[in-house]
Image (cartoon, rainbow, N blue to C red):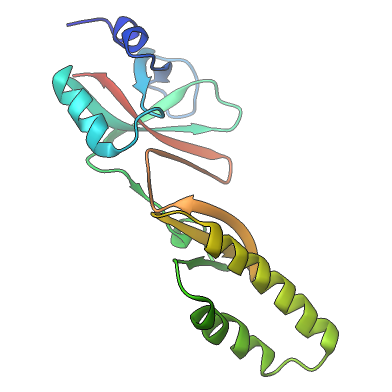
Length: 172
């Protein structure tokens, strides 16, 4: 079995360190291969099988230099607005008429001033423009009616609220 660093170097992959401590403090350190450069979870599985590696989920808080092992991983992260909490909404690909009917018209019905209407239209137009630009497998996320970000529905890593999560490979 090859050393993880050697295997990572041969395949132009990044190596990081994992701690056995749950607070990011160095304890029982060991290496992992980061899978950021893979295109899909299927590619990660094939690489892991070929090299007899285990696929895991790792976690790191802002300010930590080390990752912690959160256990085995059997599929990519499934990202949605539900991961963010209350007041977030998710928009899949849709046509303009559907967006206006579902997201704009209901808000305008009870709006009593042109300034308020203008603010609503400006925010919704920004969301609509992001929906038009998003690629296959992405969704638009809004927060309290304003555009927040565009994310992939399935990913090998994600970041939210000071926490980074990623998929990595370790020796079995």
